[in-house]
Length: 115
Length: 110
Image 1 (cartoon, helix red, strand yellow):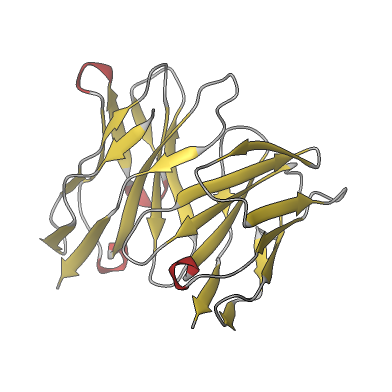
Image 2 (cartoon, rainbow over the protein chains, first blue to last red):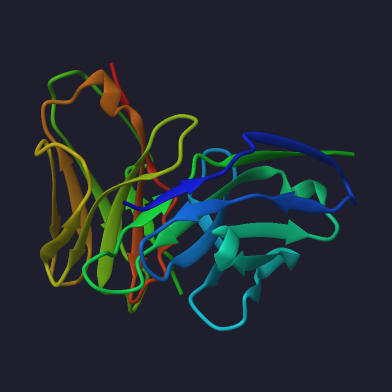
């Protein structure tokens, strides 16, 4: 069974500081990995994805993530956080083929940005 | 290019009633997935429709059913509503493994 763990429920950073959100996954084959962001009462916006190839992937809004197969991790990073980045962030794992099309999400990390 | 749209935005129902939620996929997308997001939780996969057939189903009871139309739009039906069905229901459309989400329908069951 596939699963995602986001160890940090809530993180607070100061504006301009760097950010790293942790994500660990469990999947029996090659995973497809995603990070989504959700503002209050809104749907999910795709930040970035990893399918294959270069393990460091770039996304929108200055975010990047690194796939580490040996650690089953896909951590999200941003060098300098802006107040508008305050939101909830979800890591998700999906199937890389066969009959598995669903995304399995973590419980999310709420990011607060202090001025 | 319009993204994924969902209707209605909000809905209040009484226990035991039935509800239908609607989703229009992003242009060019042929696959629709539905997710339930309870308060403070990540989205949970309900099912996915492709070519008007349910292709995969998550761990949800038969009270949850769906349909996909020839224009790829989709409906989610929930019968015999329970208080625990109160959640944000998200629709996602895709043409491959990259899913794009709509704004959701907030369902409150009283």
